[in-house]
Length: 111
Image (spheres, rainbow, N blue to C red):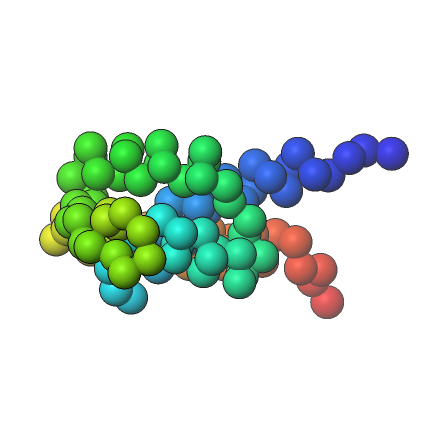
């Protein structure tokens, strides 16, 4: 029997950027908050996956960040979308909708 876990992991990884940008479109967040929101949707992500992705998104100009003091520990780095990030997210959302539509048309049996 074929193990589908690797395929499922690859599919989740492919949409992670869209999910992170979508979370940040709802408001600034620090990495722990992003991980918690992803866990709520069953997209389990570890810090070792998230931080490099956040850095890449920042380096490409889609995100920026600010430091904010915390009452429960060291300062926190809050990430937010840039104007370019907002535009890019809209493009990704459109592409995602088109992809979902195409996949659904392919996998749903015709009557």
